[in-house]
Length: 254
Image (cartoon, rainbow, N blue to C red; front, side, top):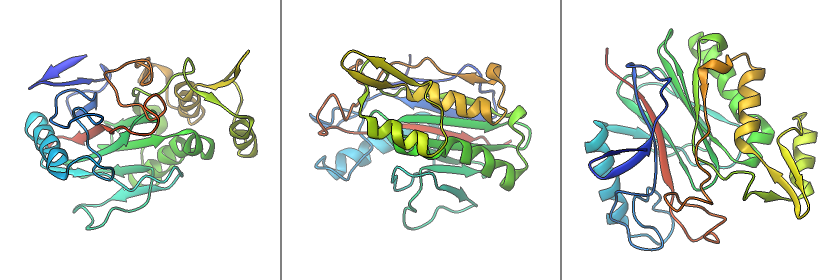
């Protein structure tokens, strides 16, 4: 874990100098409980001015002037950002762009954030992969869309899996397994235990990246479980009354 101006975050050693990125924790902001402290989601009852101050601290710390997020709907739609940020948030669960200086990010509180960089064609992607989006193949779709939009080849991509709820804490019902089967996803990421099924979001999205041809040596993971670790917001641990942490990536001006 790294710290800049009080903001604690994780980063991938695989990303080079061409990007700025980070998987932020909940630490380093001004929001009060139950949103303490670096909450980026103003949809709940956190004060708007607190969220704005948290965003300002992020902008100043990482040298970001523009941040693009989306209205996350637990689907598999990929939004392509071309130049200027849209006025209204589109419904999507992934963003891709080749625009320098525009950060793209996902807000999570147990779901898996995935960041992708194509250093050859200078393009990036950010993915929000909950169980529904994972079953629908949102990470697969993102790799495909980067290929269509920017000519990205899977063998050139670098990807990082961020903090998410782990199989230690993520008990799911058989309906979740049925959705994976319906969408032709494997079941290797389900862990059967005496008290029921557990789902490993990181393992499944890793499998999807490998399936698409991203080399294993180009993928980093092993981030902490958001439910086990109090440094992160966790929807499940906190019974839905919690904030959202930001994971982001931005192409530097070259």
